[in-house]
Image (tube, rainbow, N blue to C red; front, side):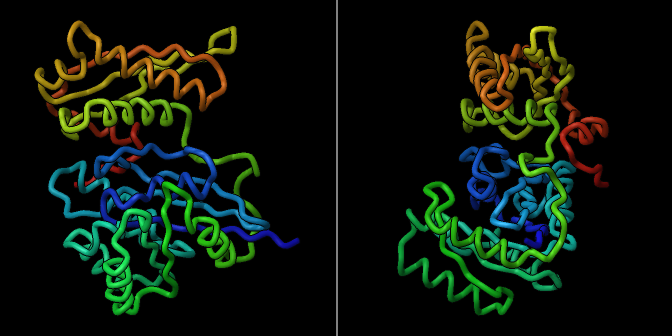
Length: 297
């Protein structure tokens, strides 16, 4: 059988469900997910197999109007992930509809040469007449070859979408071993899992002015993994929020992150967290490299 392999860029406005879709297509969790917009910061590659096709799924940060250096780096990473892709899949929150954030992405896609498809996500919670209206309006742009209605969280329509993505991939040898599901390093995965817990447990209490840096990652003689991480915030008040009363919140974040990492890695994990106030962490070039972003002026 002839192998096929290609790149699918998953783009969209923040909170459209891009990471949830990548996880669903891969068949396991490779990207962190939270209800907060802009959870994804750097582009991550999820690797899925469908028949003789290997799909290289680029999970990109949400595209929005950037204000800070970190914002600019995230949006640059999104468009870099789409550059030269064999297919761009625009994911739209079918419940949220077509607002200014979606229109920003549409306007940016208009001049791109890559083949594009439209994926309306969250159809399980969307109003059906409005959903069809969104589809009609978006297709009036003439940008999209196909439209798919899915729910990445329930799996509805995902198999059909995956089959179409496979059919669209060019003839090529596979780029990764069959059992590899992501290009993320273990250090990056560790930092992302802890960051996910920050979002899930602190919700609106902690703004996006935080980052997680894996300072040490090593294997012990017994096969377990030891990880030391630094959670960076901009103000002492934010540090107090992360720590919680008597350090209880940080302990819970560490406990849940440790359990998730042990599940992902298949070995016991010893996770050590500390919180540091670094008002200017968004201006630290080395940290951008650590979290997989390019420095953008």
